[in-house]
Amino acid sequence: MTVSYSSAVATASHSALFRLLGRWKGSIYKLIWADLLIFCIFYSTIALAYHLIPITSPELLELHRQISNFHAYVSLNTNYIPLSFILGFFVSLVVKRWRDQFNCLPTPDGVSLLVCSFVQTPKNVQSPGDQSVLNDAVATIRQTVTRYVNLASVLCFQDIAPNVKEIYQNPASFVSSGFMTERELEFFGQVDPRFSPFYIPLMWSITVLKQAYANGFIAHEHFLIDLIQEIRKFRRRLFALTNYERVPVPLVYTQVVNIGVYAFVVVSLISGQFVKVLPQIPSNLTVNMSNPQFTLTSSETTDPPVPIIYVPIFCLLQVAFYLGWLKVAQSLLNPFGDDDEDFDLIPLMERNLTISLWMVDLQHAMPDTQAATGSSHDRRVSLAYPVDNLLFHQYATEGDPLLELLTSSEDLRIPETLNPLSAEDAHAAARSSERRGSRVVEGMINMERRASRSVAVSKMLKR
Image (cartoon, rainbow, N blue to C red; front, side):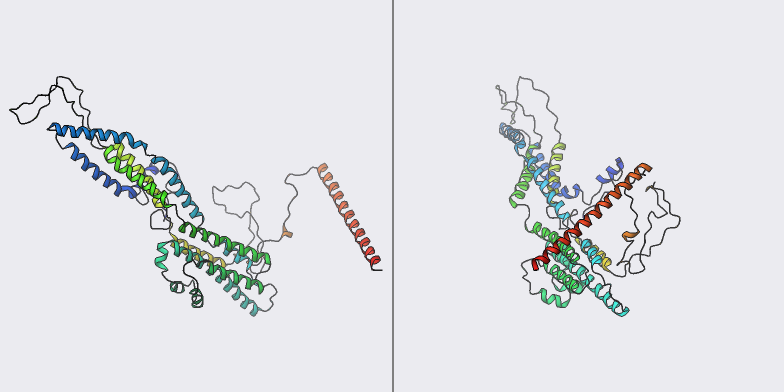
């Protein structure tokens, strides 16, 4: 599940920043600590092997000189790797895909709202017994359509999310969880398993809605079209998620970025080392034969040696930043896994099923609306404190609130303008209204004349 920290940074402060940096779950420390530890172990091994070998012979001195030349060559050419350029484009691409996949996560709220609004009991029912039977039929239609829509999302999540696959390992698990009946499972077994079958429940839901329209539970054809369009939008989101899973970021791009970053880490094991300051070989080299050790003497004065810092602070920071940048892309590459920043689909499925079934339930009607007593007509409203009085008067009928809500258009009194009119303006408005009325009357008279002429012409043609 994506780690939420919005409440921690709601108010900008230094303490909030330090609390945010101190978190472990979903942090950069959790992603790079293993790689950074391995880098430190190898770096320390190379540094100890280099600095603990004494220079006791000209051959060892020449070996150290070659190592220093190789270190200078590697340090000079490390910056030629366009790592920032490659990583920048790769992380931007991955974050954009991650955001697009989040926007494609389906919720059946739109379908449930339209089903709750458009699938209703016919109004021309007189008998209370018939009304009860029809209410049961409406409830069955609503719940069936909602169940099919949720089943489609679960089938899609089963293909793209391993944690959902562990819960629903076979089609029989959908029956035990209540998403599917035994009869539907028999039909479901005839589908080609190579393709994601999430479209089948959506097809069933459209069929149920068409039957409901034929039986009069959907009042108008436009309502049926709106329901089908909403189901199509839901299917489009599911199909987009399956496409993101089937067509990932090109493998060659991912390989280039990973190889480039880890090659830079390996090269930093050499370029990040601190080399010794080697003495120059003098021309008047003398050897003391009585002493078996070689001594290098020179009459020239040399500069004092540069102090060696054994902890590569800036090298560690550079490696940590590049590794963290890469780990961000790796964790967001497939947001349906088990990483801290991945989408947890199990709570989303539970939320979708609970909310959608609650929406279409006939028992969850609107509360009885009552006129507010002592309501204020003051237009100055402040939302900084709780408002004790109602701002609007709602009117409802005595019937089912799901059938007839609020007031009709006859109860509304909408002024033509919000500015009060003076006497002259009111007189001018009345005269213009009379002129418009006279024009309407003249137009109706002209239409009647043209209609009478056309009737007379048709009679003459018949003769």
